Every structure is written in structure tokens, then in C-alpha cells.
Image 1: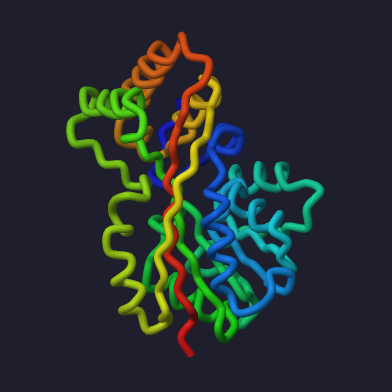
Image 2: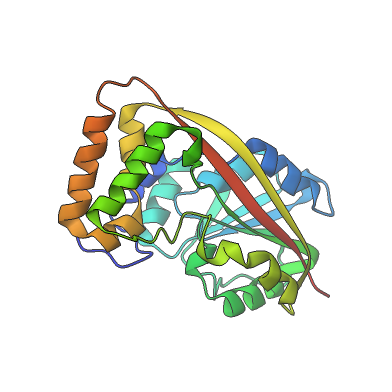
Length: 259
């Protein structure tokens, strides 16, 4: 197993694409309702798009155009393969420097990736790319493990491998704890709205294990040997199950471009 840096999903993209869940459909509908034009006229940009799970959900909602920006070659290439037969345009760029034209988008999002960006540089860039009245949305899709005792048990096992392990990409810690206040304080955005919605995904054991394999922050913190040991524990714990019921909590912050 290769040694990864935080935020580097090289080698994880296939598992990420095949096993990560969709986001809550009701949250997507609500976010579209906040925009100042009909869905069919919306020009959409997804930054830090990964393999395009969220990107394709928005595409399927019927927006006018879709641009996916993803800096990681492995993630982007898998996203392009998964997005065949769509009109999604893929670009190699970052949140801090998207390479997009001024005032070229009505809606710009970062799904499960904004915690990797530099807040000040990225929000300045997003304001530049958005048209007047356009919106930026940061969203995450963490597991709501409290809804299933089995998932609580599996998560607790991590502490036996490394006490006080930090789950930086969980969507329920770190930047999300202060994001509302940060966006309101930003000189680039206003009208900050928070939304959340739960949805249940029934996973096969193979998909559930694959979702764990796609997690970057655990690989980095545990190291190869302990991470492999954790996967063995999970595989043994779910061996007799046909379905794992996982509840996800889609959390979204939407802010309107100022000025």
C-alpha cells in the first residue's frame, strides 16, 4: 500500500467512485430552489469534484451546463470515465485557481472537499467566477453512525488502533463547526443558509468495505499496517450480513455572492 499525504486520493479513486454514496436528493432540490433563475438556465461549476458523484447528481437535475474542476489526476480520470454520455466538462485546476472566466457561473459548489481548500483564497476566487446573485455551496455527506449500533462499534474500534484519531473529512468537525460564521464574516458572500437532510443507503458488505478503502484521512493517520488491520476487522464484523444500513447526513452551506 502506498504512503499518502492528507488530501491525496491517488490510488483510491476507483473505490471512491464505486462505493461512496450519493447526497440527499431533498437537499439538492432545496439548494436549487435558492438560485435566482430556473434550473434549466443555471450554469454550474463543481470544484474539487473528485470522481463526480455530486456533479452528476446536479447534471441529472437538468442544469444548462456543468463544469467539474478536480486537481487530482486519478480522481479526475475516474470521474471522466464515469461521466461518459453526459455533457460534463472536466478541468485540471484547484479551488484557489480554477482557471475559469470572470462571472461565468450561477452556482459553484464544493462537495466533501472544501476542508482541503484555503478559505480566504478560495472564496475570493469563487466570488470572481460567480455572476451577481450567484451562490457558493459547501456540502458534506458524513455518516450518521448513531443511527446504527454496528457502525458505532466499528467506528469505536479506530480508537483501539490510535487513540484520539481525528476524522478531518467527516463533515461534522473542523471547518463545519464555524463555517456559518466564517461565511457571514467573509467580504465576498452574504445570505448564508444552512440545510441538512438524512437519507439511508443500503450497502452490500463489498460496497461498505470499499467505502472504507476510499478514506484518505484514516490511511494517513493509521499508516498502512494499522489501516489494513482495521479493514480486516471490518470485513470480519460484517461477514454474516447481506446488507449494511447506513444513514447519511447531507449538510450544506449556501451563500450568495456579495455585490
